[in-house]
Amino acid sequence: MKRPLHRGKRLKPESKKRRAARIVAESVRQAFKFEFPVCMACRKRATTDCHEIVGAGMRQRTMAQRELWIACCRPCHAVLQGLPQSVKHATELAIKAERDPDWFSMTVFRAAKGGGEVVDEFDIELAACRLAELFR
Ligand SMILES: [Zn+2]
Image (tube, rainbow, N blue to C red; front, side):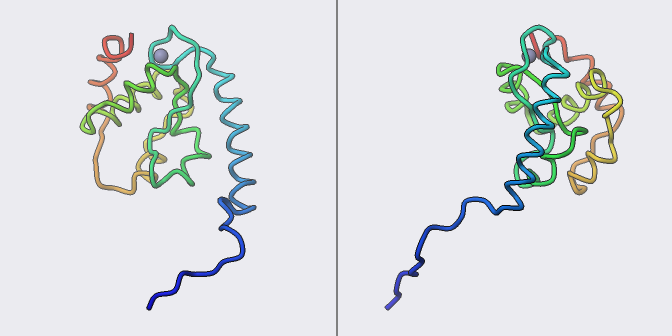
């Protein structure tokens, strides 16, 4: 018969090391949002969120990489998250290239992505043309 594991207390939800890293990352992200008080996507509404170009699974790493962040408002964040996979990264990179060019990096993007899907300059150019109609 299987016996349940007896553990005195529940597992720590987050290690000390992880917590320290998260706190640093959060303050840097706070500063990033402060630098872009207006949404990078629609350029109209106030920034509320920090969207990650490469998220889920890679979070631990991308959390500290400005090259992968987009400061945006809630409605645009929802649009970004709802984009079909085929155009999602090209659109995100187009925003990054236009609004935060010093921190646009295909190298960082590719490293975070770990190969697989390929986005090239042409896809990004195309996506850039559609930014105004996508984000209102
Ligand atoms: Zn917006």
